Image (cartoon, rainbow, N blue to C red; front, side, top):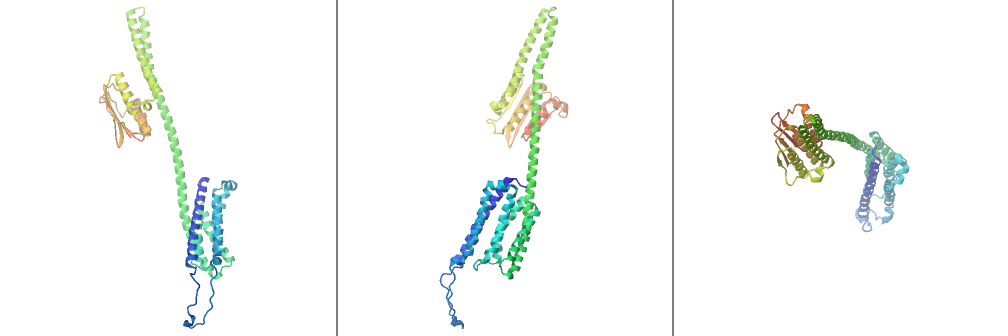
Length: 436
């Protein structure tokens, strides 16, 4: 079953199609019965004495209004049914009252009205191109096809087949019990068989398309659910990585500083009564370590509290992070950033900045490098390259790779739709390339 909103929208579209077809058919009948069938003057005998026949009396045709009475009745009833269908399609109160019966009720209107009107009214039309059995079939066929599409949209193939058979049975039953000349019953029977076969073929095709559409919608819903679960998992992983980064920050700053100060003060305490000069030197070193630890702790807390990427933009944020690391650890820096910076999505900028930040931290803490460089290029794809001349490592050594945070960097690259490559050998430095 389709959602209620889709069913109501389809019914409204069907209503407008019905009204549009009614207007087009009325225009065609107007041309046929006023232009073609209306005589220009009185019909006179063509000199019957010249044809060897006795003169025939002049019998005038009935007035146009009397001859078109059944046609006007046909369009009056048809218009009432079509506009009632349109009104019900937009009347939410009726839909709420009928609930599950609303759609079948609308199908009953659009499928029975053309058949009943054609059988009871069209045979009384004045002679014309569409007043015979074939004309009756053509007049109702488009509307019945709309009804067939409505059935195929909402129900299964078995209901579609039932619709084709039921409409044919209804029409043949009305013809049999009406005043239509029974000599034409074979014509109606032949037309009904052809129409039933056509309905079954078209209904099978529409039902197959609708089934494929429903299966596609179900697949999309399942894919959306999987993506939502995947995004949630990624979010939890990102939070976990940030917690691990925070733990590393505290371990490499505050914990190291406190440990060094504690050892230095314990040594100073031991020398306090033995060698006051040595104790004083140890206390001075402890104060220097305290000041350095305070500075590193403030830097780490500032990085945790503020988002340099949002405050400065990608270019300045990368420059600030690289220059700060180079200044604190006395490293040579080769910075190559485009000016102006390319326009990138927030996710891509976040991935580039976080990968660069992690790589810079690895360089300053583990690589023992003397110089490093950062280069950003955009030519079809965005490429971030970070190189250093440090100790390097074995890329295949998973333990060291995990220690350098490469797993988190690769995950950030994948989240942004890119890839991360690492080139490194012991003693030969490291090269990290992020391509998005």
